Amino acid sequence: MRRAGYFFIIFFTALGGWIFLWQSAGDVAAEGAPHVADAPGKVLRLGIAPFYSAPALSRTHRPLRDYLSRTLGAEVVVYSARDHERFLSSARDAGYDIVISPIHFLPMLADAGFTPLVRYRKPLELLLVVRDDSGIEKLGDLRGRRIGLPDRLSFYHILGMQWLSTLDLNSGSDYVLSEWPSHMALLLAVHAGRADVAVTGRAPVLLLNASVRNRLKVLDAGHPVFPSLVTLAHGSLGAAEIERIRAALEAFPKSTEGERFFADSGYGGYVPATMSDVMQARRYESLVSQLLPSANGAAGKPDRQ
Image (cartoon, rainbow, N blue to C red; front, side, top):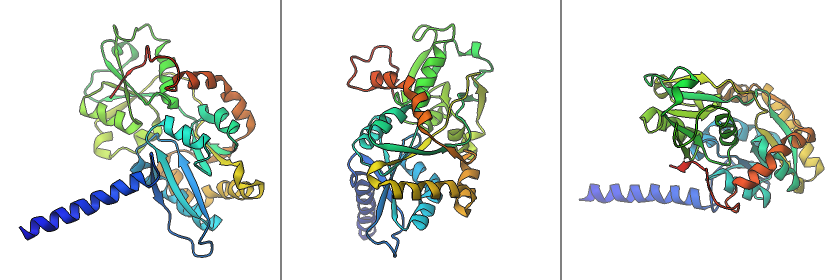
């Protein structure tokens, strides 16, 4: 009985810790960097779009968090929202000092006071991921299949919907479309047989456990490539601090942490991000607005999982 009591104490203590970790920032999950002794009061909030789960984002971005904490002399806290809608809302409400965002949010973030700094060198590419025993080898094999997309405000969801519209297939009659909370949830659904095809990118596939990845295969959708994720800083930091952050990011790929980060992520380093990227992304602005819950209805949207 005493052992059982200890078990429940440990269990609920751990559970309470996870609940606090989730609720301490409202609708977002957070992980803080080690406190920096020479600047005990300085905190920078790094918001990352939820293309992975919160634990996966914290784990993969730990080298960046540690590097920025050391270089900028600040406590860097990593945040990620439960979905892209909450991420965009928090960013527009100045809930983050620095954000890592897909390019289709750039116009709204620029209008909310963010300055683009850098984006990943390797572009995004649309891929199809299926189980190795699915029998799917070409696009014609998609008929009658269950096709999954990440959440509807993600860039890959938008790209996937546009790509599917070019096929000689009709949603509902020729295939069943579903929406999943994240790329990882979608890929695991394919692995478990709950979806036949994942419309996703290469970076999420690289983060899969080897035992899962070895059961899957990647097909080229033949889709054009697109600019990758962009890092921005909010104007409230001031011009001098923004330039310090820009300089730190530009030097990040050559640091020990940066070499590890880019080797694991496959992002290929940084290139400068400019307002011209914002202007090019304006073509997605009206579509993003239509996909927000405030838009009328949800006709033609895939089922949520």
